[in-house]
Image 1 (cartoon, rainbow, N blue to C red):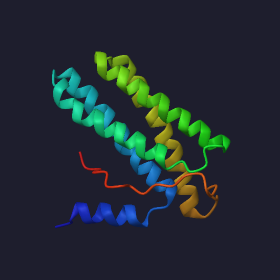
Image 2: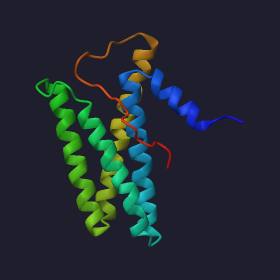
Image 3: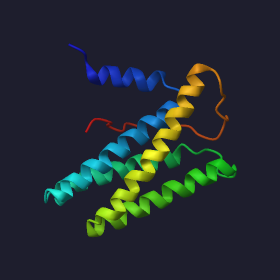
Length: 143
């Protein structure tokens, strides 16, 4: 039997910074869908724990930006601040439209980082150094 926690831990420990960001974005994206489905099924109170985890992921992504003066880093900061505000507003009113927008933006961001991660792994592109870092400070990535 495969130990999924050990597998995930090994994947995180050996991943590039781009891959780490992709893993976080993938989790946030999936959880945004879970939250929407829970709202739809009348389980808004249960959805709160996943909203909080999405916020934790956004915080982790923001903390990974180590050079906020760099234009790309500033754009990333602005994006995650915007997404966090959108999440808070969506959660307050169980706004399906806002949650759909959040999910769509996360999908685009996730796809972008997946492509960058693949290019980096294939050795065809270099990731700009000093702009992003992630420690995965204890986030539980299992939902």
